[in-house]
Image (cartoon, rainbow, N blue to C red; front, side):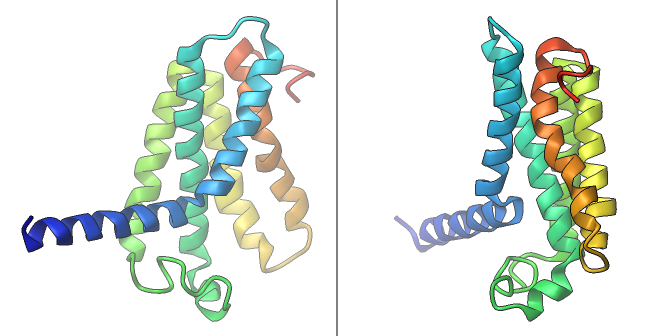
Length: 173
C-alpha cells in the first residue's frame, strides 16, 4: 500500500463526511421516510422501482435544500458553537463547491422524480424553492418563518402520495 493510496482513502472519508454534513443525512433520511409513508398509504400495491426513485430523488432534493441552507447561513453558522464546525464555516468546503453540489443534487433530484411523474418533480422543485428562498431567509427575521417552513415540511408526505397516484387532491393536501 502506497502513501498515495492511504491519502486517497483519508480524503474520500473526509469528503464523504462533509457530504453527509452538508446534506444533513439524518434529517434527509427522515424526510425521505415521510415521502415513503405517503407513497405506501396511497397504494395497495407498490412498485419497487418507484420506491427507489422516490428515495433517491427525495434524498437529492432534501440534501440540496440543506446544502443551500448552509450556504445562506454560513456567516451565522461560523458564530455559533453548535454549527461552527460545519463544512462551510470551518473552511473544509468552499461556498462555490457547496453551491455546485447543491445545484447538481437539485438537477438529479428533479430528473429522478420526473421519471416517476411530472407532478412529483414539480412539488419537489417547489419545496426546494420555498425552503431555500423563503423559509431560510425569514428564519433570522420573523417567527412567521415557521408558518412558511410548514409548507416544505409537509410536501414530502404529499410527494409520496403524488408519486403513487399522479394526483394532487384533498388527500395529499
